[in-house]
Length: 536
Image (tube, rainbow, N blue to C red; front, side, top):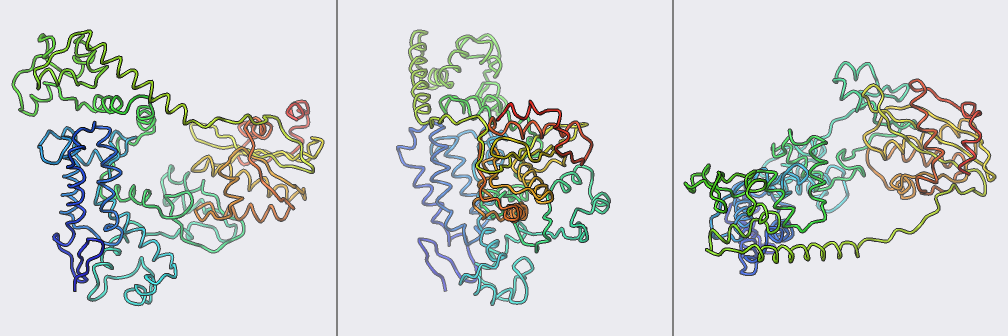
């Protein structure tokens, strides 16, 4: 028997394309509104991401949408993006697959409907795998995987479409166990076994993952999120990889940094989009139109001297260059398709209006900025002893390493203990700072140094320690730090500025001068009393 839920008609046994016309029909109605035809490309981008691609979200949260329907939804959105409405057929200068790539990888960051559907379903599957005692979990557990867990569950006999949909996400959240790579005696990574199995690069990444000294029980975390919780955003990235939608060759750090700078420019959005089209080579020049067999004339309509190419329009033809710089190709298109021409003074006037719009945009952004409160940059003496800790990242023989340093001082600034060590660089700066904190606390515990408070300049780690709710891959190290803080009677951890933590930072930088995994204590700083006291 079919059910109708918020406009969606689903059968318990099977689903057909006619069962879910609502998202497509609703989306078409939204984007075909007459007011939407007046939107610029920047406005269409916002409408697509905030409305058109958000409408099917409820349906995709529990049911797998047919591939044909996903294709239809993507087609309607793509047609609206390139033409301004879904009725007129216009040239699609870039295929939809590349448009769904991240903005930082030369795409537009639109959602691929099929990948997003899989990521939404994986959220339900992740809850089932964590065995959250909800009513839905109890019903599905008894019906489909009574003797096993979700990841090992079979399709079963006479399954509902809801179960078949959620089970599709198993491929996305499949988990492998790594306990076989850990030496259970020393609770460290088994370097010999890892070297035999993995290449050098992956070996370095595995060895950089910190392990707890307390031998805690294994638990399941989502590796692609620092908090360990599954998120649709991280799941969507994984789904794109599974469906081969992410462009591997464009994912270099240099290209990502380049595109980030482009999209973060303080310019009107339409100017940035014009720059994006230029860098992707999809400007509607006559050379591009001839390549698609749309026109036969190839000379520039402004100067009629050379072939109209991207380079000619932006660098050679004076009028076209002025037009493209100041009005997003608008003057040339109006002259060609509407028979209107512009005098130079009119171009200058319209360019001035665009410049004024740019100033208004920058003015609004500047007013929205939060004023920074002046903080003290000097080290603050504690009531009792205080620990300052920091990590420093450097390259050694083309390999990233990190140095960790700490210093314990009393109420009058006298040094009680200090240490430095070189370690394998972790996956992130936060992981390096957390490892530095854990090592410094173990040193204080071993030397029987009682510390009342801790200061460090990594705000994220301070929030992790104070929040006590991190459940990701670093959660065992956070728990280690909490236990160690309790053992040395530490009652608080505070965030400070980089300037207020300068001594610990300078000590951490000394790790580059000592040999691998060496530990140095206060005697290494005995000849640097002036250096230590200069920051009191």
